[in-house]
Amino acid sequence: MKLKPFVVFLILLVAGSLILASPGLAKKKPSLDKWKPDFDPKGAKYRCIVSNVSTPGLVGVLAGFEIRDEVWKRTGGKVYVDFKPYSMLGGEVEVLNMLQMGAVQGMGVSSVASTNLGPRFGVVNLPFLVNSFDKLEKFISNEKLFSHFLNAMDHQGITGLDITGYGNYGWATTVPVKTIADAKTVKFRIAEAAVNQLSYRNWGFNPVSMPWPDVPVALKQGVITGLDHTLTVCNVTKKFEVANYFTQINYAQGLFIWIFNKAWLASLPQDVREAFVASVHDVCAKSRQKTKAEEEANIAKAKAARVAFYKLSDAEMAVLKDQSSGTYEKYAPEINKLYPGDTYKPADYLKEVQDFLN
Image (tube, rainbow, N blue to C red):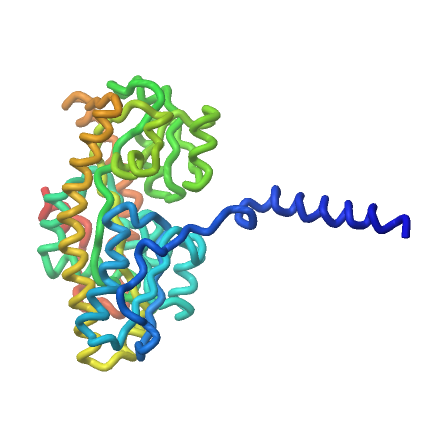
């Protein structure tokens, strides 16, 4: 009997240690109540689980719920798109594998993670290529080039349908960055993507590859002193509370590519499939227009919060563009690689995109 209090103490101690050691166990799951559908999905014949890592506070992510509602309407309630943002189904690499196996049916994958299964998607990550709202729309308007882009994961059993965005990439920093010399003193957090790492090395900067959830603590503790991200994301996720400066580099667009399991799409009746695809296209087109307005609104909000904005000189921007040539040379073979399912077979896809946009 005397051992019982001690045993109870040990159980409580171990349980407490597990909670402290596993933040995921203690962390409250985000609520989706705000975005509940105004219809009852129980009657749907087909269910499409779609994942995304980010917050519906970004219009490019909110598109997932808009796709849900539009698909329901156009298919007469036959298809329920069960959208799961906030990394509710896991990290992007993990969900990509689930999508390939058919455990989930869709995903709004970030362009930086998309290259894990579709290297051709990396064309939009190359610095200073698809680096403005206008260039993105121009790229999308070219049916031949854009269709070939969306076919990047066909050999993996995955189909790309369209794109939404989250703004232009730049630098949120804890110190002013007005020149390349200033940038070389900053410890930049960058995405865990090879093209980003190579670009920063070519520029002579100090990149720190780090998962996004680790950023808030690292920024506050000074482990990193800058973020490679879009202004909208930095503002929405309150990074400007620590990093009070933003340098508008605009070297790439932040993008989500909406991809779906090819076999699942093919299993739908033709009329249902056509309504599904049309819904995704129309929602994404409207979302991209809202993303442009979203960035302008967040610039105004950041300035009102006394975030200081800077731009590099034209001469220094030319230096960065020139130094980016090594990134193009490295990834051109992967972007240009052709697969059995490709109906368009260009000799040099990357050059065609460059010539078209520039």
